[in-house]
Image (tube, rainbow, N blue to C red; front, side, top):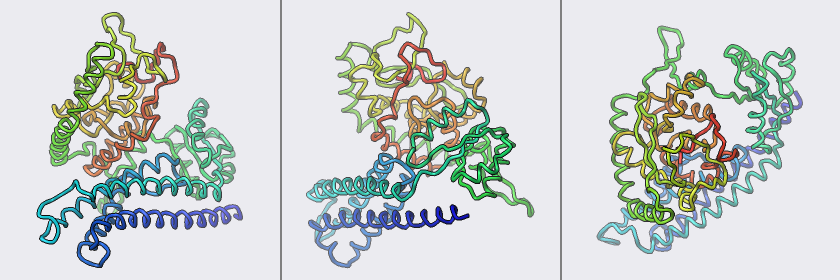
Length: 472
């Protein structure tokens, strides 16, 4: 009991400190914007309609971007994800507010037309640089303070099979300041209740369905935090809606989550954004094509059959990032390894920033893909995945996508099962708002060095659990 009380007050003290730092951070970010913008827009120094409107726009955009990217999540995430989320969010917030301010400047006392590229833009860029530096400082300092006052939580790892331990320990080990595995038990251990009582947090691996819910209730009764390895059943339950039938509580789980109206909106968004992207990126497409051709004289575009809606196949297009492969010589498909010698110099740059995927906007425009959706899987893997992972067939409920949970949260070498669960999380939680959030969050991939990390096996290995050479 004393341990629980001490932990409660320690958490409360830390939460107050981090909360105060979050308020101060957002206040400084807002002050930087309004101070620098007021240097060329002096009316922002007085209480008036323009100041009130601009302040409202900045605050509303800040709240919206907090919902999209997350906020000052120190203590919950590592420095880099928090920094990338905050600087992405404040960039969009600044841009929206800047455009609103310039629109309000179109009046008899200022400009007779909308001017977006003026001295105000230079101050906006200076503001953003200052904001980025402040964010980096606050995130690093916040995590240091958080973990100074909050020691790692003691973890009890409960397994369904002994061979789950190594993989789960590796994942938890990535967060050594947050969690420390002190105990490991099988789900049928007779002394589980006592061991749960000693832990701060309980991690549940893949367990038999009945055992998992028994343990969840046991942890709930003991007021323990739980991290539960997601499986198809949990994803379905988490995204269900409550329904009252007569006077009884039910959970409503609809098979077809997307309505006709949502399909139309999603398709119109795909057409508009893919057309805009192809126009904006057209100079880069020409330059990249020229560089790829000059490097080794091989084809510019890599093509391969992939899986999409209702199990239909389509030909995906990407910039070629590896040495040309003569499929007539052999059909061996090999996993891309770290520092793979088959990756070209131009290809290494394209892969680092995901620029090799720009030609997929053509697939989106044609209707083969959507902007957001499950990962487009290689046809060579489909039969095996369906045999090893029965839930794999549910990915075919929606079109393959350029971005999504698996593309944003996963890595190139994330296991097939974990990628499947991320895809199903998107399908079962679909909404237009989720699509908007994922499109905006895609920009954070630029800050994820490991998002294109290859496998640690040699290029010559044929690892059937992973992506193959075809995913260039």
